Amino acid sequence: MNICCIGAGYVGGPTMAMIAKKCPDIRVSVVDLNQERIDSWNSDDLPIYEPGLLEIVREARDRNLFFSTSIDKKVKEADIIFISVNTPTKDYGSGAGQAADLRYVESCARRIAEAGGGDKIVVEKSTVPVRTAQMVKEILGESTNGNAYQVVSNPEFLAEGTAMSDLASPDRVLIGGGTDEDGREAVEQVAKIYRHWVDEERIITTNLWSSELSKLTANAFLAQRISSINAISALCEATGADVDEVARAIGTDSRIGPKFLKSSVGFGGSCFQKDILNLTYLCRHFGLPEVASYWSQVVEMNEYQKERFVTRILDKMFNTVSGKSIAVLGYAFKKDTNDARESPAIAVCRRLLEEKADLRIYDPKVDPGSILSSLGLAEGEGDRITFCTDAEEACLGTHAIALLTEWDEFKEMDLGKIFEGMIKPACFFDGRNLIDLSELKQIGFRAFAIGKS
View 1 (cartoon, rainbow, N blue to C red):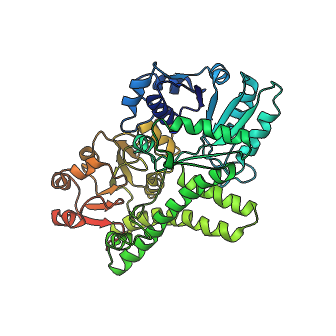
View 2: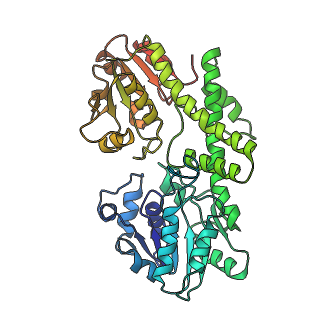
View 3: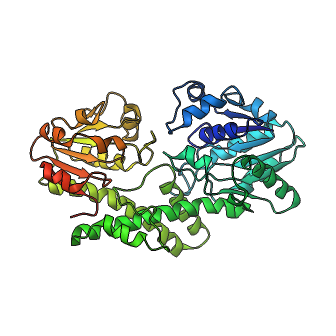
């Protein structure tokens, strides 16, 4: 079998690397228009950071895993083609701010039709709105090359930071396809790939539309849990309750469970907000405004949580941070990734800069260029931002610390030494509830955490 994946990003690269590792008899090619990205995949300086990814790429690369910009050639040679390109929220025209921008998916479908090379199975790996497969099928069906195409949905359920373990031992593999004989056979061919290492009972097959909608729904439910506990965190701060204790108490209920009940400054990443906005748009499109309103509240609560964090900083620092220096520890949207897309740190830093604060930023994996870009600043701009090489340097001479990513190394900081090097009174705002609040206060910090008074 010969597989080609169009798109060498956060999903395509790791997924194909795992398939190549687990299926040495399958030739796997990952193609992308971006030469710099492909060059990175062919080096030891990969374009994305995931624990364990480099080792797997090294093992399979040039054996049965290949990275290339020769898109048409690899597509033509492939039996199965995965589409794993970006589907950002539209920023123009109808549906701007909510609907998914499918131009890259459409471009892939047209390119596959033009390349020819025999009958093929085309797999949607990108997160797409329900019924996107219909567009792909129509484009492929209009091809004049005489080839037959089957479209299959195989959404990813990876969590950044644990992507490789999620791929090695998935909760489930979801494969949706047509309900006729050819459709069922296409689903079976994709399932055969995963059976190399995934137990049969974890491979779920559905129709196309159920598979597409399941991905959006899964992310919406997970984000809903985070927004729910964050809403309660505001009440905890007002009443003297402890949000961690509340989360532990309700998490022991088997009907609820403990996962995704960790209160924080807010959720981020490339999926949650984008998928909820897309789900909201779909509900309105299909005449379900009440359902759309329900899901939009999840995003509104997330925005409120980030603004509430900044408001608390201002309140506890005598209602102004103008001219004050604040250490920002962590910029990625979660630990063990270099992805800062939709990170809560973006909104927090923007607001602090609006309030004329000076920021000293440290993240172990997110590079300064990505941080400036996320803030809408070019290289050389951001004169109130200093990038630091470690946490201690970032905190030196500051009035306050804002911990925004739960990197493990922040739990190992010498807090006493850091406190000594700060301007007093020294404030510590823990946006991840990572550090013991009583310890911080004992050292001398004016310390504040999410959902704790």
